[in-house]
Image (tube, rainbow, N blue to C red; front, side, top):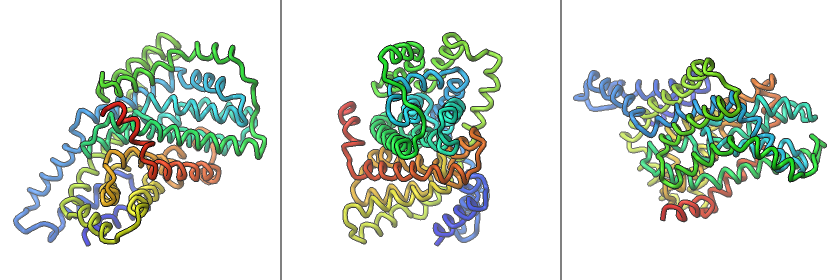
Length: 434
């Protein structure tokens, strides 16, 4: 009963527009301090001390240092001209296809996702360049904004991914293995979004096509060579075990500074303090959510909720897709409300219990359901990528929300493939680490 009231209060506060961190934390703190929830010998002072300890424990991790560092790297790359170079190189590769520039934006998003780890940062970095360029080529503004939002959402699937860092920290699962398993899932999402772009371009005549030219590929590759080195260094270092995730994040910041200041000469030292403040405000918001979620998940665990849910699903004797659908559907639907990096927290225990009831490993679960926060970031009314894209394009949420629906459908289809075809998420980690 306590857990039902807890989740009911969570969803009610989110619906009322309260910030996610407070929507998660206030019901949990109130329930912990309420009389009758814990034995009488547990005095209020002791429970208050427990809450404070949980808040600090929630963010007291070396791994979580990767969050502010990746956010800073993304902000530096946005201002340092890296986005423009990646889009031009991607256009040289796929600009010959129907909807060439639209496909190029998705390809550039996949490159950029391998650097920053943040969907919001990817959307902002690419949207400022891609949306005006697409409109100039005849793409509708709403479609352009929706496509950029869809491409930005890939940032939470293709490593390095901030939600995967958080999930690995909370569940004690190898973050490097999560990254390896998420790579092909992200590529599948990107190909799905490119399919939507090509279909729309053929149906409505969007955009223009350029002839394929090896000379153009070569010249754009030379310009983007330093920018393309970032995902190679970051991902190569993590997957090979040379650096940890946090060390890779620090390496990404250093490399971004090198390219933005000395190679591209698009960023000055005077701009760095502003970038630092801007990126760390966003990072602090994420870490505050994590701290509050630690209190929430502790209370849920104290009520034996995951064990009860796993037992209930097991007694239902569902066919093979049943428990997996129970684990996927709830979190994906919750993305309509959460939309950001809190996916790994309150209802994650229930999702993991549903998958565990069917024998799925926690790391395989996270690799597959990395698509769930991506879908949440695209769905109105609280999808963070949607908001960022709307702000860049100067359009209303309703306009872009209608245009995003084909991309959401493609993302759901890709998520189903990732959920029910294990080799997609297990082959690469088993090849590298076993």
